[in-house]
Image 1 (tube, rainbow, N blue to C red):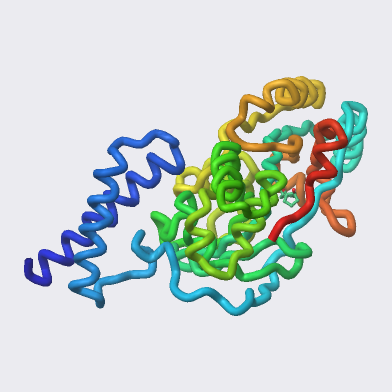
Image 2: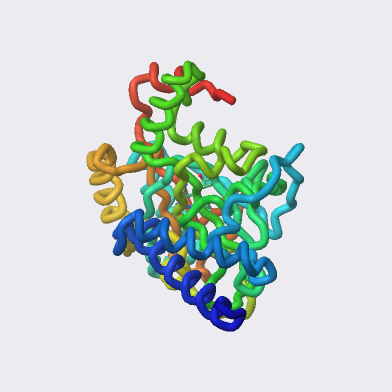
Length: 327
Ligand SMILES: NC(=O)c1c(N)nc(OC2CCCC2)nc1O[C@@H]1CCC[C@@H]1O
């Protein structure tokens, strides 16, 4: 195969692999067999070995980085990654709604209600459409640069369909199935077990060797646009739809409501349906949808006045005690 043909074939393979990855990791609906996928990856790897100058950072062969790092660099977030105030019962949600309506001088309010994914908050930076940097939340202002570990997560696009410069935030997590499988493997190797999926996701992303992170099946749900060049987005729900169009994994269980009583019904329904999910949630997040209204409401010292986390009642206390971090 001559250079021109190789270049065309590499472009074609990257496009096909990208599409199949989205079907498999984002839509959870694979269109080809694992063997066919592996075959395409092998063909791409062979071509890149023959034509090394044709390897680009967004190639799926470049997800698992090189050498383990000696330590993680610190990163200061361009905009702080906020924490959330908590609501523990329905009346706390009604109080939140009252504060919001007072703050808005009794305008009508639309809420977006989301599952609160029980994982590790991460920030992803894209420049001209390329994934360039990823960090843990840290203390909300300064996090750790875990770019090479985040690159191994298949649901994180290495390149966006448009050359956008933006930052997005979301939760990296491990599904219940992946968690059970990992602990089974660790038990067989007589290694300490992870107490829960959140700890196993955090422990996996804090591995200095990207090959270990790559061996752990991690997922993401992206839930916020940080800064973004140019584009005009007026509401949180619009932002989430935009994130989906860019190929991010965005949780589908979100709903919008105009009354807090409807939010309360929805929250109660998930308190019951929670065990059916393939991943762990520790509550719900309720946000004022309009960005103009979010701006009007502003922030307290550490969290937005326009959002609140409803925390599900803790399961029997003993499960909380087990929650001891393993390395
Ligand atoms: N864990 C979640 O599913 C989640 C979510 N669905 N939405 C947000 O919204 C952010 C942006 C505005 C304030 C918090 N945050 C979430 O988790 C955060 C990460 C750190 C504190 C909260 O747990």
